[in-house]
Length: 117
Image 1 (cartoon, helix red, strand yellow):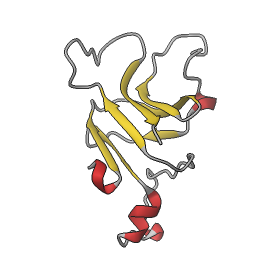
Image 2: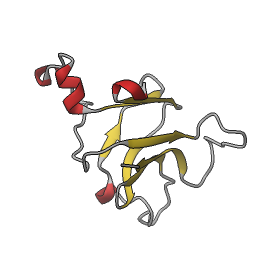
Image 3: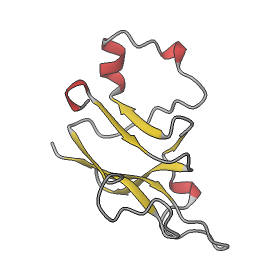
Image 4: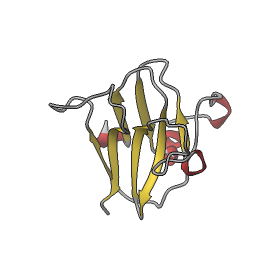
């Protein structure tokens, strides 16, 4: 997937979002919900809501997608284009790691994304 500018990870059918965590770093996470505004991932920080009807997330480089024949007019209501600094990104998927708890009452970090060049 990485060779063609894509990333994919299995998840639960849960509320996922893409959130910035620093300069060139992001997480795909299911934030915990409390009665107070969540301090780490408030709604205002959400770059993209991720539909998990297929129990997964997927990412693609938009310009590569277009070069391969992708047609922006075919994008659906759940497709989101996020403007990030151009470069090479490393996606580290955590959902299959030993000890990963998708049912945690804390934030569930499914993947870290980091600009590496």
